[in-house]
Length: 142
Image 1 (spheres, rainbow, N blue to C red):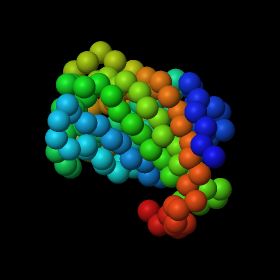
Image 2: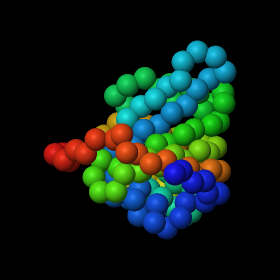
Image 3: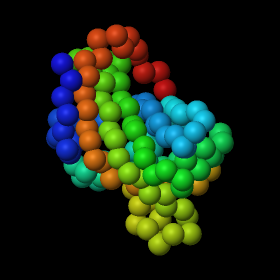
Image 4: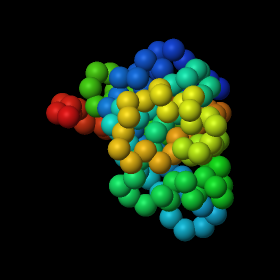
């Protein structure tokens, strides 16, 4: 059975740090929801109410466009090994660009990635779990 939290419990912070893949969803007022897979060791949990992820080029920049208009974001993590679980984090994101002063503090948290274009700083407002029984197991190959 799913549960809801106002902040990320330590057990789930550990779960997030172990994940190789996560999904980001944003939406504008109308049109389609943008849902993208992310990885490349690009996410850091700063505390139980805040995380950042480094976005790189390689596709459109629809996430940033959505956030500019409607600052809301959902991150989803799935257990592809171990105990089944789906974890969603809902929150309000801010976009930090290389020319912003915060970039100098946050970018060193990551290994340098070619094409780094922005950091999304997510203030987590709701944490929600669900069972994840339908998620298949996979072996991480790289």
